[in-house]
Image (cartoon, rainbow, N blue to C red; front, top):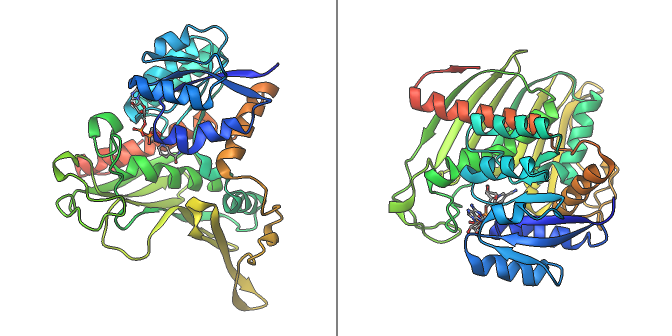
Length: 365
Ligand SMILES: NC(=O)c1ccc[n+]([C@@H]2O[C@H](COP(=O)([O-])OP(=O)(O)OC[C@H]3O[C@@H](n4cnc5c(N)ncnc54)[C@H](O)[C@@H]3O)[C@@H](O)[C@H]2O)c1
């Protein structure tokens, strides 16, 4: 397989923050040939900045899908549109990298998985937090059995006052929800991946819309209360079929000091693990706690970074590793690190938490 041809659908924030620069580093492997955005200037601008000299631009993704040269499509649009664009792209014979969350509903996400299976095309979801240095290390530790049986975990996705005010984030009709579906999805994905447990039994959820009329002090600038339609925080108690339990906390705004995002606490029979630090800047680290020689000890990586065995500086940012692993999976016909079956379970649980909160009762899967 020669140089892959990529089509980009959605040329907004995540395209510029993650995929366009990451793909630019892989010029020998993949070239960006077609750009689509419902706002024409955005598609044209991205095609000029990141495309091959003859790159095309369109406002209709169906035009892009007609291009028989395109091997892989990047779906970087608001959540509610993920499923239709992804399914159409798969049906058109393209592999698909879809941004997180997989979809706004379980039914939509299931359609995506079914279509990928039917067409034999590959599908992955943009959970780049799995590619962080601390995440890869904790994955290795939890899968090696160092923590023993992981029977309780906390999935943290809590911002004190960081409501995203650009794009369509607090618009329920476009995103399907607020912080739970937006950032809770990353924390839950990491947790299930570390625990290697994709069999939920029940959830009990609650969501709040308590701070919408208090926009002052927001890190991204004050929001418009009239447009803040989603929850501002949500919580879920998730029981898995084997009894393991996860507490998920998600907030864009909450009066809480100890905030953590895309981080996990794992409690195992042999040891515990808790993530700290600026994970979003790839500067997170994990503290392992256990009993050694009869006393309680905590171990954490040194500033130099080496104790987990990763190469440290120069080893690449999570988004670069994500892009490389996905392109390699297509070229070598192997699985992407983030498999759609796993992302589907994340979507299912998040939907269960919203449903439980709305019905005021537990939801059983
Ligand atoms: N992986 C991450 O950590 C991460 C971070 C931010 C956003 N995201 C995800 O990326 C997606 C997009 O978020 P964003 O921050 O880039 O939003 P954004 O609003 O900045 O960009 C979305 C772009 O898609 C375009 N668009 C909307 N509908 C379209 C359609 N039908 N066809 C073509 N273009 C269309 C919009 O005009 C806009 O330019 C969301 O699903 C979000 O959850 C992921």
